[in-house]
Length: 97
Image 1 (cartoon, rainbow, N blue to C red):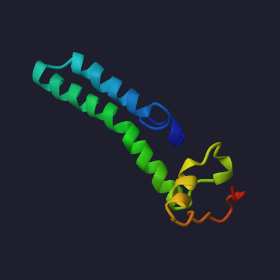
Image 2 (image 1 turned 180 degrees about the vertical axis):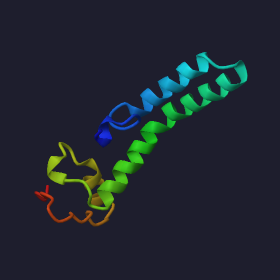
Image 3 (image 1 turned 180 degrees about the horizontal axis):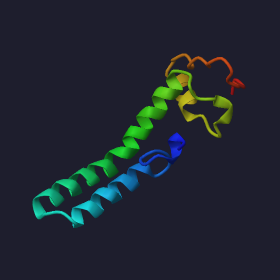
Image 4 (image 1 turned 45 degrees about the vertical axis):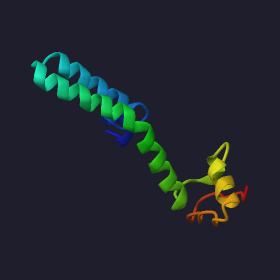
């Protein structure tokens, strides 16, 4: 099974995981279901922040193929702030936009 086909990976993985927790909360005693619902809520609230941080780290380490980006707002912001653009890893297609 490919990594993006595994449960919890790929688009919507966190939402799917939260849905499983919410469904499990319906079938468990009241005390445990409250905890499961809180965990599901936590997953839904933190997933966008986590995705943004992972994307920013990938960009800053040069793991992102910049030629695949439609709009590179982070590069513009780093240039305004005087930070050097991140290095492009070998094999990447950097067009220098």
